[in-house]
Amino acid sequence: MLKGIGVDIVQTSRFAAIRNNTVSHILSPAELERLESLCGQARLEFLSSRFASKEALVKALGTGFGPLSPADITVENDAAGRPYFVLSDRARPLFDGLAAHLSISHEKDYSVAMVVLDGKD
Image (tube, rainbow, N blue to C red; front, side, top):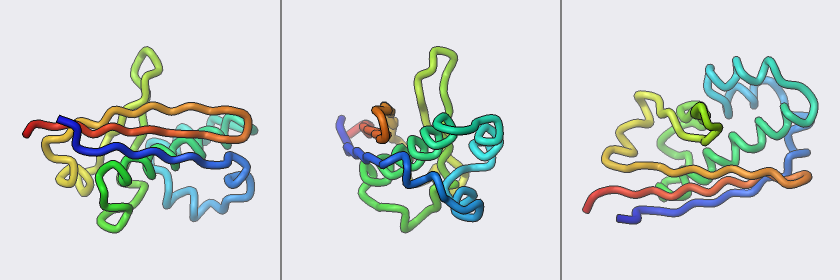
């Protein structure tokens, strides 16, 4: 059963002058490690798409970031490149019984993410 839908769009260039302390607030430790290997436009797209994904997730949940930090959510990719969420121990209880489906896209200077939450009822 559909439990929530969230979408977020972010202008990639917003992340060009972002400070390290802000990056560490947005990204999980695993994402920070992956970011180190990226540069230029790939780095900006990574940052903007992760932020958009996390915003879309908490919009679908209907809570905003109040009960958790963006760093409590990790966006990973499976072997085929499909994105999915990995939740910290702190975030996991908020999503008990829910499955989150994520789609991310980039176009020129924008990243967009859409999340659909479903669960039993």
